[in-house]
Structures are given as C-alpha cells and as structure tokens.
Length: 496
Image 1 (cartoon, rainbow, N blue to C red):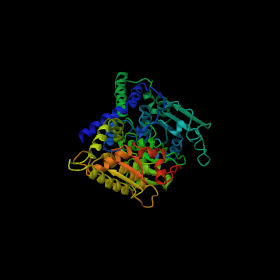
Image 2 (image 1 turned 90 degrees about the horizontal axis):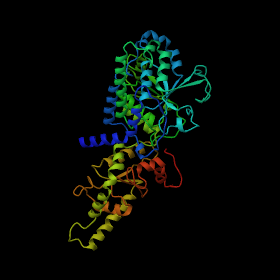
Image 3 (image 1 turned 120 degrees about the horizontal axis):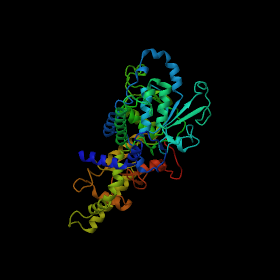
C-alpha cells in the first residue's frame, strides 16, 4: 500500500509539471498570466477524489492559513442583516472567470470569502466554453488575463427581465488581473483595507515583505499539492449549455469545498457561490435550509427541484451522474496505463502464450487441440450470454475500477434492468493465481490483448479500461460505447 502511495505521488508530480511552472510564474508581485490552452489527452481524466485528494487538499488549506477562512469583522455583525437584500443585489453583479488551481485566482476567491460576497463563477480553464465557444452565454473575447471579474452595473434594473443577456453587452465592466481585482474589491467593499492594497505604504515594510514571501510561497505549494485538478475541462464533461447555474454555500479555505470546486471546473459548470466563511451571517441562513447544520459545502440544484446535498463525496458523485457523460476512473491507474503497462505488455503477452501451452508432456497435440476447441466454445457462449460481458481478475485494481464505472454508468442509463456479466479468470495473471489460463491465451490470439479487464459489448471486443479497440473510457468519450450497445455503430446516440 505504501509503495502504491509513493508511485501515485511521483506520477502525479510528474504529470502536474505544467502546473508547477504556472505556479512559479505567479510569485509576487501578482504576475498575471495570459490564458493558454493545451491539447486534451486521455490523462485529462479527473476521477472522484479519494483519501489522497482529501489529504493534499487539507495541506493546501493549511498552506494558506488564515486566508479565505473567516469573514472580516465589518461583515459579521448582526446589524448588517438589515442590509442583506441590498448587498445580495450588489454581489450578484459580480461574475468571476476562474481557474480553481491558479494561484492568482485563489487570491481573489480568498478576498471574496473574507468580504462575505456572493458571486457567480464561470470556469475559464483549458477547453472551457467561456473561452472557446463564441455562442456560449458566458463567452467573452475580453478574457486575456486571469482572473477576470465582470461587474454588471445594470443587474438590479434587469433582475425582473427574463431576456437572455450576453456578457459582451454594454454596461458590463471587466477587470483583469489579481492585483487590479483586489484593489477594486477593497475600495468598493472594504475601505478600511486601503492601506493593505498592493503598492500602498505600510507601517512595517520589512515585516510585510517577509509576510508576503511566506504567503506567496504557501500559495505556490497549494498549487503544487493540487496539481492536475481544477485546471482543465474533463473529457467526461457534458456539452449541454442549457443548465441553470448551481448554487453552493462555500468558503475558499475549506478543503472539502475545494474538492467540489475542482470538479465543477472540470465539468465546466457555472455556479453561484454563497460565501459562508466562519463568522458569516450566511451560516444562519444555511442552517435554516439544512435544518441545523451550517457546514460547507452545501449544493443546491435548481435544475432538479432545488435538490440539496451536504457531503462533498455525495455532491461530487451527484455532479458526475447528472452533469457528466460518465464517472471517470482513478486517474492514477490511467497514469500507470500510459507509462508502466506498455513496457510490461511484451512480458504479459509471452506469459499468456506460455499459459496456453500443454501443462505436461503427457498431453498430446490432438488432446490439446480438442481442449482448446472446448475452451473456445465456452468463451463464445460466455461472450454472447449478456449485452455486456467483462473478464476480470479478483485482485486487479483496473478490473475493480472497470466494474465501478459500469455500475455507475448503467445506474444512470436506460438499460431495461440489464446488468453487465462479470467472469473472473482468477485472482491475477501470475501462474498459480490464474484459474483459466487457456481462456486468457485464446483472448490474446483473437484480440491481441492479454490484459484484463476485457470488455465485450454485444459480442464485440472494445478492449480494456483505457485502451484496446478503443477501450471503455475512450469509447465513452467518443460515443461509440452507446452505438455498439444499441447495435447501431453508424449512428451517434447520446447517453440516456
């Protein structure tokens, strides 16, 4: 287990090297970077966060303490509740083009939490619609530097108008860059902080310079710890533009809120952030909604009768189920599939061929041929016994992930109650642990694939979890999975 953890850490560090470069570029004084895109690959998968993600997210929060945790005193007094309606109207005019794991964007979100401001978040990550699709409601040609804040001065006048508006309309002001946005927020919502704005005189310049270095180093480490998450749209993201923005009670420094925000970015989902940091009066509002709990995150879905969810793992599973094409498998396995397994493929193939040879010298070629024919017939019968048949190993993490993906996939689709059929060939491929080595050998002869899992849909081999002809995950990405499943390979069928 420790070895697997170490391999995971090394692979993720290697894969997240572009994030490290961006993080170094964002050291003081708030150097703003220009938006850039990178080609999506199979490694763009973003799996459901696990204990490792929770751990690193917690460390990222520690690196930024006490930023983005507590609302400043001006906004946690009960007397301010009388002004809540006006404040909400003002705050709804703020629209943030955001990248979750960008150091500069993090600075802005921290200040928004501390000022107790509500705002709408539009993902501006690599491949997001806001920067690639000119017909998208939130697309803007004005995004050159991130973060970018759009201020709609006409929001209150148009609050009762149902007409669709474009962010390119007149009356909307864009501010780009962390230092510029922070200055605007402090001048507009926190005049007492004028002396802390970047570039202003400070009482103890040396001490503040040291503090800035420490905080910016912490910001860098936070980006490294969560490298690879919340930076680009996942290949599992749905293309539907018709969803209403989700609503999330959230504050920047919460490690579980971060996990949800990362997935919202990766699924390219716009959401309204209800800032609910410590000492925020909005926590009382949240407690009324939940029946007593004021813990974040809390998600409300206006697209599904305002359904509410509280636990981060439940929220993330919900987001993938209703707003993704499928739920991605563990990305660590994907990295292993891309880096280590190709090197082992010749060995696996050689062992599979050897396992198909006579077990003893007493077996004649004729007897061996007859046995092979019997196993082949049994294999044919199994492959045709269900719409989806999966050959697995009991101890294989790839097999476990494959089954979990299919479980979630079929749960969210119209399959007339049908389930996939699993056929185990033993514990693992190693001699002594495999129960049916000849079947593995025949699969290799027929499909040139000896590794498991091996998936058949309506009798057609699509390969393994990440690769094959074309593989389960690639077939879900290009839609061919559903075409084969519906016995219509020439017509692209959407997920039900």
